[in-house]
Length: 251
Figure 1: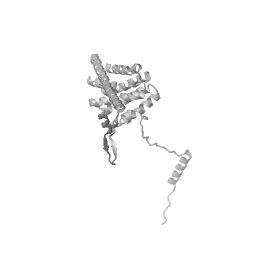
Figure 2: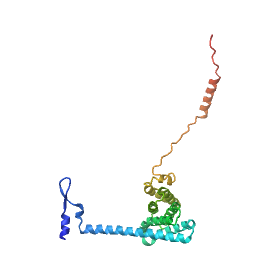
Figure 3: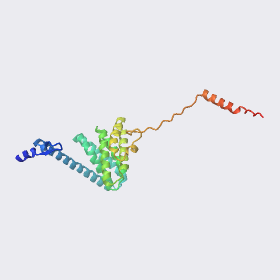
């Protein structure tokens, strides 16, 4: 207790010459309790995310290897996996949406491990995530955002083409949203601008026209046509000018 008191009374001299308490020494019992609780929770969350990534990765590797035909079974397995992940929100609450990023990441890692097409998988993962989110009434835009984040993160880890994979993921998410409603499509486009904008600005080529945050309009070419009467007058004047005889020079 005496040591704690001395810690709180520690001071440091600022550049202005005033003695002020060292900021972190002001933490009392309540402050330390909250700080430790937050640190512990965040560490726990990271452990849970790591477990979900490993679970998803190992599951898809096992299933695809057992199936033999990665190309044929890959899409079905991805769809089934995302469906299971999203449906978890019905049992444990909407907080399970937080796990979607880890599931998407695990799927990409798993597909890469068995030699599958990561670009095609990215598109399918994002599309299925968005469509299944709508079915359970989850926040479609948030699911799209976290899914694409997980895909990009995994692609960086495996040393893949982040730009190409991100394009595929965004395209898949938008296509999935377009099957739901115009509102969902708009929401997904808006939220993905922030996610993908930092990745070599791939959004400009990944999304259809009209989805760009600052789309440059092409200059409008306006063709001005003369009225029939004005055209006839101009033609008559030109004809008259051509048929007018040239004056002869005096000798």
